[in-house]
Length: 112
Length: 114
Image 1 (cartoon, one colour):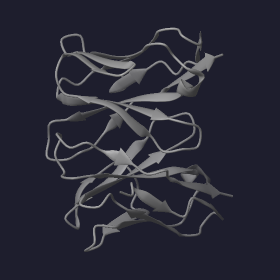
Image 2 (image 1 turned 90 degrees about the vertical axis):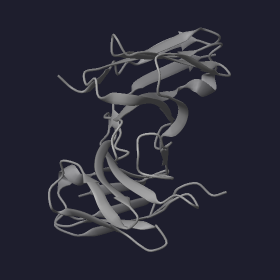
Image 3 (image 1 turned 45 degrees about the vertical axis):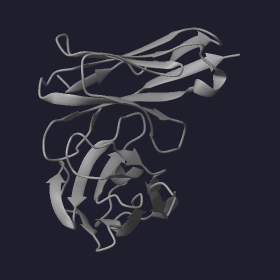
């Protein structure tokens, strides 16, 4: 079992839809949770960063963490064609080192 | 402020050759990490350096090495290149080395081995 599982998609939605992206993880030692957006042939861009169970909102984006289920989600409201990208969940342990463990990434396609 | 900068952006090498990739972290950041991203996969951790010392190493062969300089910039070296080394190599920087630090990535260096 991989430490972080993420459906690779692609996920195709019409403009304006609410998008739900999900990851599961296996290691209870994971404490910090991030979502990165990666456009084709570019580096990952940090979208959301959280360390506690519950919801964190930033504009059209909401990150949700359920540590009891080892399940994290990213919701995008009013999706736009410019949101078309690969979304990577990334998790790290509460250790002395900032080593991220990534999912494979989910490709999102938002059609006008 | 400039973000994480990497060079070169693209390069093509022949099997068996050696390559050096360079990274400048965000100003004030002391931790630099390197990741390899193969097409269709998430990034895989290679190294972390903090205050010029290696603090973590991923599951990569000894052909991979790195170092961090007094100005906190870093180089990743890969010797005896294999076709499977073709990937996007990402540099990430953070203020410190612990789990509470936000990690920012550069645009990466695309390496093609032929």
